[in-house]
Image (cartoon, rainbow, N blue to C red; front, side, top):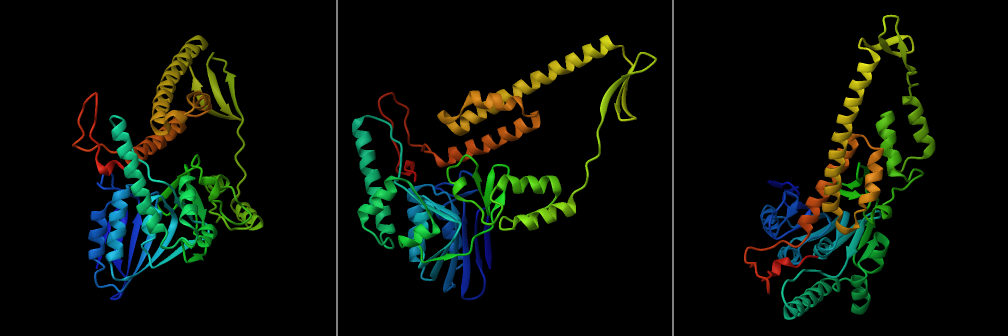
Length: 380
């Protein structure tokens, strides 16, 4: 029997063994299809009731503290032997959920991130202090889960949390947070950066440079360009010599292009590629210039509108860190299609940022002096 939700899958491999995949943000409520909620986990575990062993695969940036703690409790109540595999990234609350495993395995090119919980409060000084106290208690709860494995002092653990620490597999192993290191996972280059399974890492993300593929070819953009231009899919661990051999087999000399405009005897003009006429213009030069000027004007207006929309989306996605002037200059050299593509990426980033931020609850009141906050506002 199997149960499949978009970013969470539960499947019984046989009578005694099953697998559970958690790919996505941890959330109290399913705002987007990529959100994983405690209710999703409860539904998935019901499919694995008879399993004595469960392999749990995690690939998550984290999310809600309290939703994550509920998931940890569910997994700890599960009597099956649980082996956790970190498929790419277990960050924030994703790393806490991993601690529910009886055994934790991490590929050599995967990452784990641990940090202090954060939240948002509205109101007066007393409200702020109350929020701070709640965050301290949440941190203590998370520390108690990490300390079941962490082989140093609690003070050292809290220092790592305070610094928002990214751990590679060797570092996680040295702290006792995992049991063993497995072979590297294959990474795929994408327009944004790279992908571990379904989790996409933006090039501007600080962890992008930490996830470098092994082998002679270490630039993911080069790999993507080779695939696009030559139709050759080269793996990140391929040697440079073999890569060049594969490219040479697929290489074709580009056709020579010799574009020019010639004057015809009848007063018209023709666009030529070598000796081949591509297009003929019968209108006089003055009319042709006027038409081209009008088309250029329309093009400039369309491009300006596209740039303005893209910059708005960039601000929504990156907030105060967005460099408006820099991107305005960059877009000067972009085609309209390229600008739209970048704008679409920022739109998706803004949606993810909204999902990862503080969500207001229905019991919040609109007042100039004080706003009620809900426990679910706390995020990790």
